[in-house]
Length: 151
Ligand SMILES: [Cu+2]
Image (cartoon, rainbow, N blue to C red; front, side, top):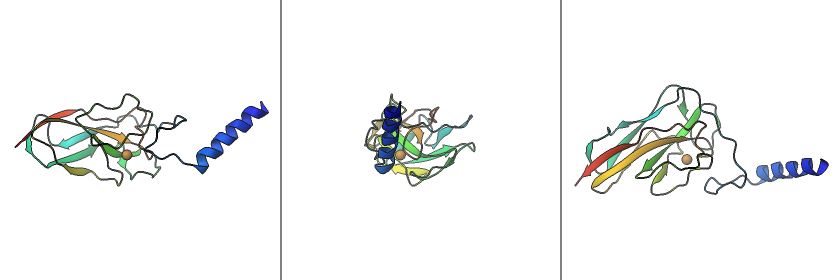
């Protein structure tokens, strides 16, 4: 029993001493941040099915149940936006979101962006993340929209 407690304390101390970089997959599952009931994230523009020119101005909407806070700030019922471009949401919602060409982080609390996109069809979707870039529980995710970029 004593050994078990020591092991737990050592683990806790190591987590405090060496905070995980959000880009790494944590060895220990992070505690998920709860989202309040009724939280909704949505793409204000462009509209689903829109024909647009590149660069595309994408505006992020979040209903009043939640607020936007920069990454690293722990505050109840807040998060920051992630724009998923031409990709499905991750299967594992319990891990920090990667930063890739298809998953853009808006960790300063931005609520819009301008994305250069090649001509053709593209999908866009918003996924809110907590201070550690981990989706909330349950995830706050928008409908996936499809747009067509015209040359
Ligand atoms: Cu993030």
